[in-house]
Every structure is written in C-alpha cells, then in structure tokens.
Amino acid sequence: MSHHLYDSVEPNVITEEMLLLAVDEQGPKGQAGRIAREEGIHFHDVKQLDLDYRNVWKIENLWQFTSLTRLQLDNNMIEKIEGLECLVHLIWLDLSFNKIEVIEGLNMLVKLEDLSFYHNRISKIENMDHQKNLQFLSVGHNNVDQLESIVYLRRLSKLETLCLAGNPVEQIQDYKLFVAAYLPKLVYLNYKLLDSETRRLASVEYQYIIEEMNEDERTLRKKRTQEQKEDAVLQKHKEAFVEHLNGSFLFDSMFAEDTEGKKLVQLPDVAPLLVTLQSKFVELCQEIFDTGLKEHLRRQEEVTAYNEGWHAAVKMNQELGAKKVFKFDKLKEQFHKEVHQITDNQKLKIRIAEYQSDIVELHDFLMMLEKQLLEQLKDINEEFEKNITEMTASFIEFVQGITAQLRDLENYHHEKVLESATNTLERAKRNEFDEDLPKEVRMLFVDKDTIMNAVSSSHDLHLLKIDNREDSLVTRANKWCTGLITQVHREEKSRNRNRVSEIHQYVQHLRAAAIKRIMLEE
Image (cartoon, rainbow, N blue to C red):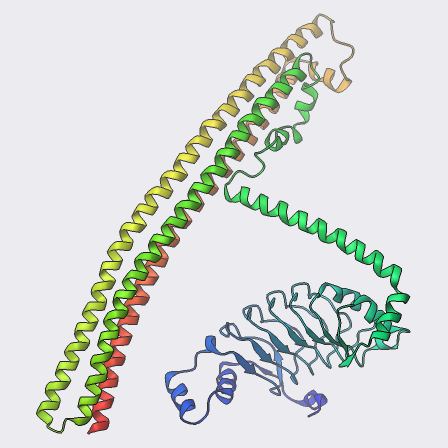
C-alpha cells in the first residue's frame, strides 16, 4: 500500500478502543483466545503491538504497555516522535512510512536494537546518544544530505546494519568510502555487505583523519570516565550529606562574595590570623566529612540488615502458606474426582459441604499467617525506625556541635579583626596611617561607622555561610530519614493490602470453580 494514500485520509488518535482491538487481533485464537478475553486483556503484559495502517497522527496512550518489546507504527501519519517514555523494554521499533522530520523522544528506549525511520522527512541523524545497543538502523528514503550524520553514528558502537538508500547524501563523492572509514564496525550498508576492498580503500583514503579522530575520541572517553568517577564520588558524599566538606570549599565560600573581607585582610596582623582561621576551619570541616562518611556507612548497613530481616520473615511466611496450599491442592484434586463419581444427591451435598469447609479452613489459615506476619513486620519496622532515627539524630547533633565550633572560630577571628581595625582607626586619627595600605582600604577609615560596618558586614556574611551549610545538612538528613520511614510504612501497608486481596481472590476462585464443576456435573 502506498504511503501517499494517507494524504487525503482523516487522521486518527490512539484510543483505548483501538488498543483493545489491536491486542485482540494479535492475541491467541480459538479457545485460548476466548479464555483470554474472558479473563480480561492486561496491557502491561503485552509484548508485541502492531498499530500499522491505522491513520495515526499522534503517538499517545501507550503508557500501560510497560512490558512491550516490539512496536509497529509504520504506514501512519505520525509527525512527531513522542509518548514512548514508558516503553523502556522496547527492542524493536518501526516508524517507517510516516511524516517525521526530527529524530527525538528516544532517550528512555535504551534497549533498542532495531529501529526504522524508512521513508520519512528526516534531514539529520541526531538525538540517539542513549541507543547504545542499536544494531540495525534504517533511515532510507529521507532527506539526509550531510556527512556529519554519518560521523554522528560513530557513538553507536554496536551498529552493524545501516540503510541510507534514497538520501541526498548518497550523491556526495566517495560517500561509500566515507561510511566505511568512519563506521569501521559496520557490516552491511543498504543491505549489502561492505567488502574488504572497500574497507581497504577507505582506510587509505581517510587514514590520517580517522587516526586523529580516534585519538580525540580516546581522550574524550578518558575525560568522561574520569568525570564519571568524580561524579560517583560526589554522589556518595551527597548521600552522606557532607559534599565539599573535605577541603576549604566552605571557608572559601565565606570570602568569595565578601568584598569588605578582602579589604580587611590587608590590615596589619589580619593575614596571619586568616591563615590560622583557615587551618582550624578546614580541620573541623574534615572532621564532619570523615564522620559523615562513617555514619552513612552505618546507616547503609542498618538498611541492608533491615531488608534482609524483612525478606527472611516474608519468605518463611510464604513457605508456610505454600505448604498449606500444596496440601489443599491434593484435597481439591480428590474432591473433583469424587464429585464426578458421586451419584447420590445427599452424599454430593455432604461432600460439597466438606470441601467448602476445607476452603474456609485454608482461608482462615492463610489469613492467620498474614496476621502473624503483620505483627512480625511491625516489630521489625519499629526497631528499624528507632535505630535509623537515633543514627540520624546522633549525626545531626554531632554536626551541630562542630558547626558551633566553626562559629566560635569565626567569632574569635572577628574580634581580632575588629581589634586591628580599631587600632588602625586610632593611628589614622593621629595621622599615623600606613602609607602602604591600598586606597580602597584607607577609604574604610573615613570615620568609625564606615569601618565598623565593614567589619560587621564581613562577619555576618561568614556566619550566614556557616548557618546555611548547617541548615542544608540537617534539613536533608531529616528529610531522608523521614522519607525512608514513610516509605517503609507505605510499602508495608501496600503489601498487606495486596496479600489480603490475593487471599480473598484465590478463595473466591476456588469456590467459583467448585460451583462451576458441580453445575457441569448436573
């Protein structure tokens, strides 16, 4: 069917009805299909979805298809790639024969191996940095006209097959050699094998350019690797709430915006005071940093121990439930055999009553197990909450003690700066001003208010920086602790609700199956 047939057709949107119809068409047939329809179609279980030839102009309403691995959207009227964010397991995607102009919206599709944009309106290959697993790419019959698009594909190290047939870029001289040189791992171009002679000619023609590019890429990879390591370390420090406390960052930040402080440091005796302040200040910050990492490790160990204890309790409870269900399955099997053989109605009623009693006993046993587990997990959760809260509070108390010392250091430094400023002011009144002082510093001493305001302003800024860092650490630590505890309670509530519902549904299924079997016998 020609792609151009859609030019005069009314466009459609992806509706619930369209999705249900598509899933039904592609689902099992016959008796299996009838059973599947009776049990209901669950979009989140669907692995493959074909929505081709449906006049679709906008991709939407696919968020429920979280297990989808293959999606066919070819021969539609799609203009923009969107609405695919939730399809994180997608391996195969066909968007050929549409009206797409820009490659976009693929960031979350990191598992893609096969991707087709055949016969669209794309002029540039871009925005595919996250498709590291891509092996097949078709951009045939589009508007790609620059060799830069081929260079861009070097980042797709697993790419083996590329289709660019029908693009203006094919008309560029030595285009095939260029592709072979810049994409050395490519096996097929336009569905034809790249032969060894083409590769040899390409390596000769572009030898020096490729060598230089390879070196640049190695340097870039090395830089990115180093940056990733540094980011990982920084992330660890952030999780411990002590980032940038293993050095002079906080101290430097106190003076970064302190224009008055930069002038005051040029007063007699202030520079040595500043060196002493920095040394002691950094030492205390390092103490927070080291303790923060240790406490973070302790909290991680506590969380790990909690998870192990939680899972062990749940596993043991589930095993007890499974044993009971296994025994009941024997009773169920025996019941269905006997029902088929009993001809006396009175005996049948008695046997049915016995089986119903067995179901009630199973229900009561499973609910009893759940009640026991609920109490057991309550104790585990309460103990965890107590421990993690105490750990967090203890660390916060330690930090507040150290930051109090930082303030003491700043207050002492402030007193010494004030003393030096006062002495300098007195000398200025006696016309004994140090001529070596820069003019901007001497201007602070035009009167007492000016110099006092400058000293106070510098001091207040320093204290503000200390307060802000302390507030940030305390707030984040408390938020983390509160969030973790809230998550534990929320997950336990959800687990209990789901388990109770699961038991009820299982028992209802047993009863319904028994009734259905009896009706069949009648």
